[in-house]
Amino acid sequence: MSKPFLRYVKFILKFILSKLSHDDKFSLVRFLLPEISAADRLWLARSLLPELDYAENWNNTDPNTNGEYWLLQKVAPRCSIVCDVGAHVGNWTNACLMANPNVHIYAFEASPPTQEQFSRRFASAPNVHLLRVGLGDESAMLKFYDHGTGSGLSGFFSRELSVGKEPQQVIQVACAPLDDLPEFANKTIDFLKIDTEGSEMRVLRGSKTLLAQKRIRLIQFEYGGTWIDAKEFLADAFHFFKQLGYSFGRLFPKDIQWISNFDHRKLENYKYSNYVACASYEDMVALGLEND
Image (cartoon, rainbow, N blue to C red):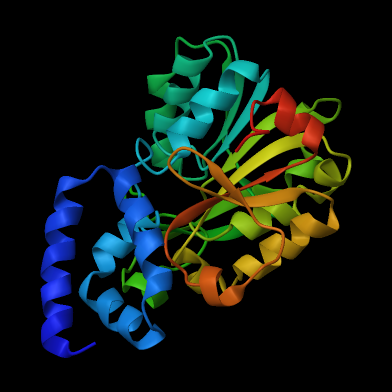
């Protein structure tokens, strides 16, 4: 294709995309991309990157449209015990309670000032249990890079490498493996949600015994630029779950794309996205995910 023609195509596509819903954008882009050459796709991708990303559900941080709340509303009514790891100020916990007021939520938040915000918000909710500890793969006091009260950047890894942000302060925070916590000694966790700004793999490694025993039925975890800071790979997560016999998939706005073979050319891109893992087909059925 000539450059003038591609510019015309770009203009038409932008106009069409501006008139479509999120689902229709996704369907259109997935239809068009296989029909053009790799070189033309690259040129269009550079020109339409935000639209392409949005259509393919990359870098969509809105839980109302990226599939997070869709999954929560689908699964939470079927859960008894849920863990919100990286609970922040409690938006996900609140959405979980709205989907199932009777579910027991164990919330983990490492930032002391954010813990206080969370605690005040759910002071009258007896089934919300705040554990003032970070989760990881060892019991230790670790450096915590605090970007301020309520900041979504705070975590156990410096954000200077990926986004060039320096923390307001660096403090020491207690961290422990989920496997070692007495609260879950004889319990099965129905849904484990992890949003820990780069330490997702540490949380998973610290939960390996529970996972191997299939006592965590469903996991959702965040992936993105924070994994650059942590020097982790999504491929590690895929093979970690595969070895434990879990199904692995990427979360979309209204479904899950289950992945049988990992292709780093498509997936190891460090773009914000969410992934899920499920312990068994029986758990998929019980949680209402067998058709997703």
